[in-house]
Length: 534
Image (cartoon, rainbow, N blue to C red; front, side):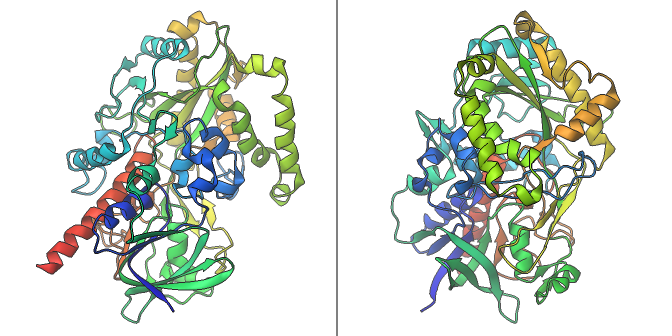
């Protein structure tokens, strides 16, 4: 028999767990979460604060995806994986929790401005309980260096003012435990009869009736196709790369592309899959005379790097992450290096395992580890990208990944910003406390000095920061795929509750804004249900 739930949440990540947990707070709601990946408990490193580096390198909890060759980024196929486990990317990331800048929310629709969303952030934080990590000798040297370059030391990077500031980032951990949205809003609430999480459940499509109302979801579990009926709404929280693909597989999206893939059109919504943007980054590496005594990426700074950028005065356009190599150098290389050096046809073969095994051997030598103990990165992140790309269908087969094209640096201003960001990172490495450590630049190296050389290096070494957004953007215009209350236009009973709704990405990380969208989706649903009952 087909089961029925009031709400089916597709995706058990940062936003999905918040939405599901809040919906299940009402005992009258029956809620089902469909998560493609395994349970978090099956991979304990996803629940451990110290385990983040092992989770990031574990293929069992990551989507394996690549972009198409990036014309303006050295023709690279860039790895754009994300968390595929209960908790989503918040089970594999560095636990950074940043609300963003008040200027970021000025670009969002009415009702989503800074003063509108602060109470929702406070509600999230009451459950999440984020905190900052204590200073170390190296982090204090980094702050001194940034201040010498014009940054202001700030005690709270969540107050909405990220204008040329440096400080310790809020992080979602407690003791030795990672506190992501699954832990805070699902697990901590204990077993609930009205909430079920189905793991290893690959959604195939949303089923619509002739009135374009979502009535069911089809998904695959243990090799068999199952169906669940939907009484009220489908809540899409599969992320900015998967949510638009699943909508298109369900017949909602650009009609021409749907017909080309052999999918019956339910509703022509051309902007689904468009407006993809991300935060590309490049890591500069330095070796210092001092020991890097830090185990987490806990220190961030933000700066207005490109003079004359089309942004409000005071809006930072770059983020600088001070990355301690001893924290996760081996695991980061195990994740990134195979995708960098192996051609597409060889990536899933034995050579990937061989590269990772070779890194295990290399990091077994004391000499290598002594070098890494003195190694750090300043990661330059493009915080306010102008370039826009897309997610398109490659096939009607749900197991075939989408065609992902972030179009990195297709707008020349983005590359100009990154070149200036590299120059700023170099200045920081030689200033203040870091200058006293006599840092020596390893990458991009002293031979890459001209603007042209730096731009070539950025293009060939750019990677993602895993902050994908915008592919089902919200807005007041009829051209926006969903409205400001996150309802998908043109159909009934589908709400979008993840970073795909974000029209313009914040300068900061997206974990906190994604949870904000999930929180507000649940709040909007509850408000509308109460209004309908009166």
